[in-house]
Image (cartoon, rainbow over all chains, first blue to last red; front, side, top):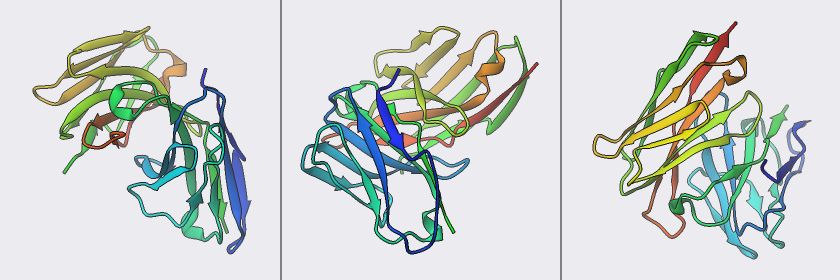
Length: 115
Length: 114
């Protein structure tokens, strides 16, 4: 059972609102990731972190920002939501880099709808 | 271009039957290949992880195979159950950067009917 948690699970907000998606893990993992997934499509990496105070942008351009002040916490923020941000956002973590073959644990996801 | 292609896109089988899902990839340099199960509206859950030297790995009724020469993998599900209805995602990792990078397939949507 993965000890990685995302809140909220479902959210509907108006255009222009600021939203923060929370992600926490209790496994002590240094590596954390945010993915974006539209229905029926593949996951796309939008942000990742090697550890505290380390964040990098992923492959898919995103207007969101992230922070990593504590090992267990990796929140994602949208300063001004737009309908194009409507998607599922998945947080993940791993002990080592993905090349090492260790398990990558995913949260349950946050479904964001911007109207 | 590094890619992961899965087939079929969707599959319907009767409860108790077996099925095999396919994954072809062009990712290089290859590091490992993972199969995930993703229930509708949930996050992916790891089924198997295989490195270059492994050609088969089992997890209960799930058996994954890997042919690194032809860059193909399959996931075989034995004696399917209604709870197997989900999307099965093939994920390939390279070793071309410090952390490595994951390449995701679009998944095979499996529906098991009673």
